[in-house]
Amino acid sequence: MTRNAPRTAGKPAREKLIDPYLRPITYLRLSVTDRCDFRCTYCMAEEMTFLPKRDLLTLEELDRMASAFIGLGVSKLRITGGEPLVRRGILGFFQAMKRHLDSGALRELTLTTNGSQLARFAEGLHAAGMRRVNVSLDTLRPDKFAGITRRGRLEQVLEGIDAALKAGLRVKLNTVAIKGFNEDELFEITAFCAEKGLDLTFIEVMPMGDMDDALRIGQFWPLTELRARLAERYRLTPLAEQSGGPARYVRLEETGQKIGFIQPLSHNFCESCNRVRMTCTGELYTCLGQNGMSDLKAPLRAHPNDDAPLREAIRAAIALKPRGHDFDYSRQKVRGQVKRHMSHTGG
Ligand code: SAM
Ligand code: SF4
Image 1 (tube, rainbow, N blue to C red):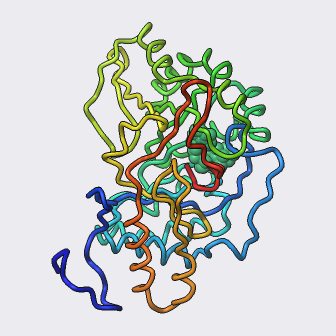
Image 2: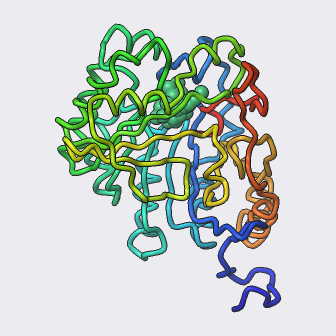
Image 3: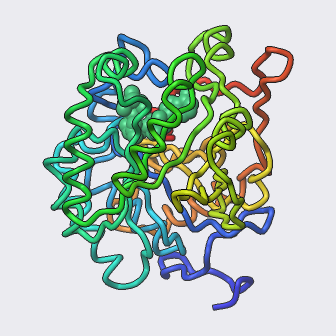
């Protein structure tokens, strides 16, 4: 079928998703829960009210939703949250997604996790076809870890990372760069990753949720500064590699490590953006930095035995994908603030 051919209702749509700026949409980040066993200070409030269970997509609905996107050309699926591994029955979802890996429709099934449950799940995830996971870890000091996560135990995460490696998963550490918090651990974290063979990506703090502006601006450690600090000790070679996302990469010549820098506040990746995000309630956000969303739970639930309306709703949502976002920390003011927490959109 060509792109302009008329569509027949109910007929499987083979056409790929292309947004109004001609960007192919091939990457879905799917949040499977808003709950978490941690309360990272930059992500959640201390007291959180989580969504009632009936609002969440069931595991079967998550499967239908993900499969609809895969049928429309999404070839990379990242599961996130909240903490995805605290969702009951989640391994069954991963096992079910394996059919899309086996058919070749899905190129990669992956996960962003805080690592607390990895020791239990690592082998099962590998058996379900997963080959890489991202683990979020901002400090290697147990007391600081307990402080920033408000309730996490570092030891448990380190055990999770070891279990993942042992199961054959490649692990990338995601470290949020926070001024006055982990500045002094830059080289320690880098060396830890070199020693364990982990990839490493630094992320700038984003103005999400309802933290007050002063706190967020105070925490902001620009990655340009972090990168300059790294260059004091290592020779950095910029890599051309582009993921369609906000990450830029360098190689540390002394260790051969690849280090990523995610600057979500810069606009320079929007033109190649290939991704969309879905919340655990079936809201599709086509841009991390904008509030516009489309509810896909309604067409999903209204037609339990027919995915055609869902596919049409997905196309309609993609047709609204904005050109880019508008974060700006300049002049100590946060514009383009996004009201929701990262745990809502899944990061
Ligand atoms: N719970 C999982 C985890 O922590 O990896 C997955 C969800 S978490 C919301 C996804 C990522 O978002 C984590 O790497 C976390 O550090 C990051 N994140 C959360 N709030 C952020 C913020 N305000 N700025 C930058 N990154 C943030
Ligand atoms: Fe939970 Fe991840 Fe948010 Fe931390 S960053 S509170 S682990 S969802």
